[in-house]
Image (cartoon, rainbow, N blue to C red; front, side):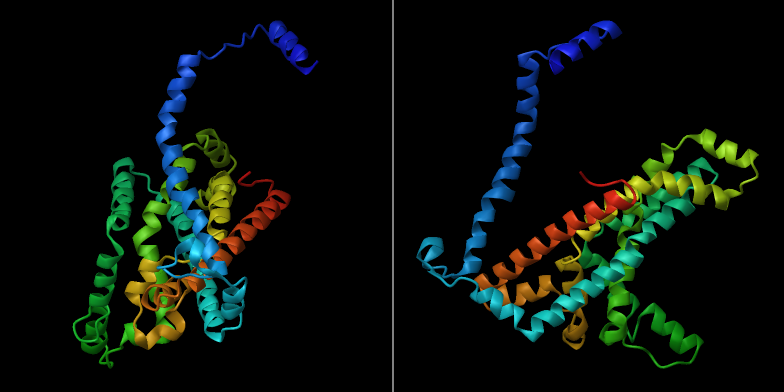
Length: 316
């Protein structure tokens, strides 16, 4: 009955549905098949390895020969005070990234949009992209050099200009999180703003003209036109960011940390590296990773439902 009504509606409107040839469909499926195959091989087949979180896994015995221990490893790390300290550091660093790192590209895009000269805006945007292509090894080396107590730019200013004693920035626990977050903003703020630039470019210019005629200055135009136009993209990226709040990039933290700041710098990814690879506790680290993934999934689903109820937008 429904198909008949659709056909009648199409006839009345003069719209004819074209049937896609089978050769075209086959070509499209063939085109996407490498991506599907690689996704299945590298993302779904390895998921079988989570079973070792319920085993005392031995490399020599393999998946099928290792002894099953149930939730032993889950109980171990849930009762381990060191793990909860690591979890706290992970959430706190992600919170800083969310408050400062997530909002920085939004503010940057709004400010860059106010540059009137077309070519100056393009040059400014291009320069802001460049740090993204530097590896974290290079970025960490730059920050170590700039913050060096003997030859660093900041300490030279403190000692030569202000007559102060040099500060060992990288050895101060109170400064570690700030340094890591600032390094991430410097490296990724321009690249993260690309999507916002694309959204801003799609906003109807007549809205700005109407607002100008009504007496709205540039600041009000940004608040009442540009920012609402960016809101769908902001919500989308925020949901994706919330899904990873229990995980943080290994490379960035590992390269900046040192034994003097382990108490505030040890996060789940570095903790898993130390007890998993260095101490060969594969089952324990797999159990931690599985719990981390489950929590991230639940957070994503919950935040998506909350976003739909509050602002009417979501991932699905």
